[in-house]
Length: 77
Image (cartoon, rainbow, N blue to C red; front, side, top):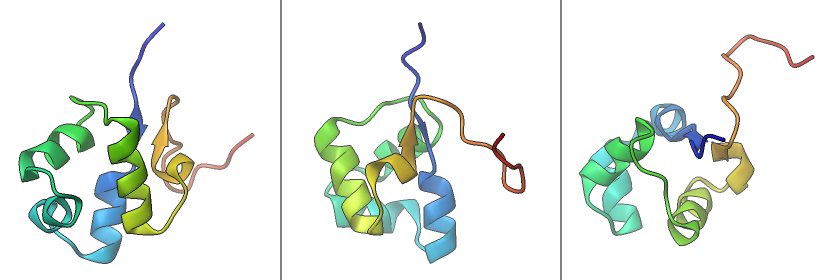
């Protein structure tokens, strides 16, 4: 069983026009941490996941998933 956590951090950042550095400063983490998260090289603590969701004003499940997110334009079955 894979313990990969998929996320939409990069998409949310792009939608809002903020850089990795700006997000990192808002969350109190190093900007490289945001890159590691976006690439799936690091899974966030529950605390950090909640802070990210709060920052973007969405539920945690909107940003993080144990299953890959469908590509934009694909419909769920």
